Amino acid sequence: MEPFRVHLFVCTQQKPEGVISCSANGSLAVLDQLDREIQARGLDGDVQLTTSGCMGLCDEGPVMVVYPAGVWYRHVQPSDVREIVDVQLRDGQPVSRLVWNDAPAMKAMSVEHRQKVRAAMAAREKAGVLPEGLDQMIRGYMPSRCLLTALELDIFTATGDGANAEQIAMRIHANARAVGMLLDALVALGLLSKSGDDYRNTPESARFFVQGSKDNQRNGLLHTADIWHRWSTLTEALRRGSRVPMDRGKAPDWTRNFITAMQRNAKDRAGLVVKALGTAGVRRILDLGGGSGAYSIAFAKASPDLQCEILDVPEVVPLAAEYVSKAGVSAQVSLRAGDMLGDNLGSGYDLILLNAICHMFSEEQNRNLFRRVRQALAPKGRLAVQDFILNPDKAGPVRAALFSLNMLVGTEGGASYSESEYTEWMKAAGFSEVRRISLPGPTDLIVGRAE
Image 1 (tube, rainbow, N blue to C red):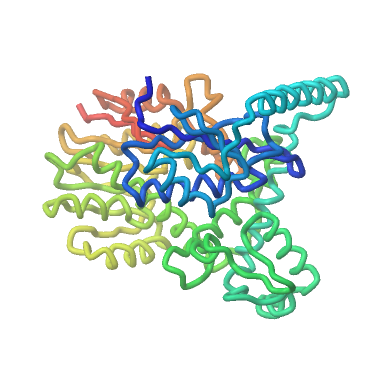
Image 2 (image 1 turned 60 degrees about the horizontal axis):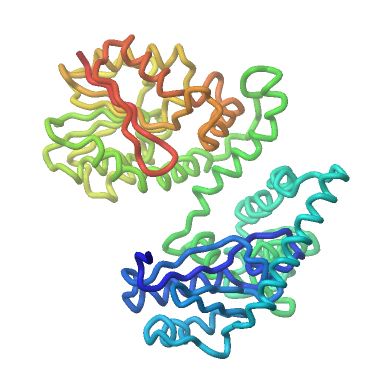
């Protein structure tokens, strides 16, 4: 049975650098071009495009197989894709110049490859060589640090439409030799291109990392650079049991970078939260630690009858006001400076939001906050917590477990928490009908109704 008229398999097996593979020969670019062409021709309903692991034919890659016809292609390049779509997918005829139909040779090559791989794995195991996956995990900070440094120095903006290392170094007030080394590493990582002595942004880096571009995300990503410095204290934080005091110099842009980063995350999730919670019966919302105001803005746009109030620390409120004004919902969204852990929250709210907040606090702080939230809600009002939710044994998911360490190095007592913990805290505070609402992505909702 074949649910699609045509099913394409493209090998995208990743292998260590220097090892021949379809991905090293450009299969990811072929896959991307195939996807674009299939969409452009309106063939999504007829054609299933699937990645595959190693087929054992690495020397002939990129390799692609077309079913149910059983046609094998080798040495496929992005420039071949349009012809494959026109001839193979539309007309049902193979592109003869790319077809590989020597079945005995293909089988022999695949078997030989399998034997070599097994022999190599056995030799590495006998020698006690560190597995490739572990080695990559240990060295994973290197490409991350290259990119974060490039963002801190605004190298992609300095590169502009093209420049050499000396010109870029002069623009960012850095050493030309050292800058050249970083630029070459960025080329190796696929974030810049190089022709002679000149460097240029790739389409991706020009879109996301250059100041003035429509989708520039540099400012928000600088918050990740700040976090990187915190993570370097993890060993000492484990000895202490909480974050290590650091003098980050209180850079004037720190808060703005943080809120920009939160806005980047929140704007993608705000619509999901509004849809999951709904607006029926909701007239007043308190958005605790509302940050950029993305969630209040989304609720205000979903219902013109809603009034939202954002409570956040004094340095954040002016930044949130900018986002609210730009969204055109100032008449529905008000802002108040204060401390959610100590200040009066108010009363009569139909919905109180804690989006990406609870992980900053200790268990006792969250228990106290939930009790105070309960008092601020109208009868049958709801508390909605959106956060990373740990498994019952707290050993996953990966994002939630790693984020818990992020709170260890960044807060006095914060952490990621499990569904059972949130449920117990809510019930102890006087909430009923506590339930979890799964959302796409790394965070979920825990919602309780005031009794």
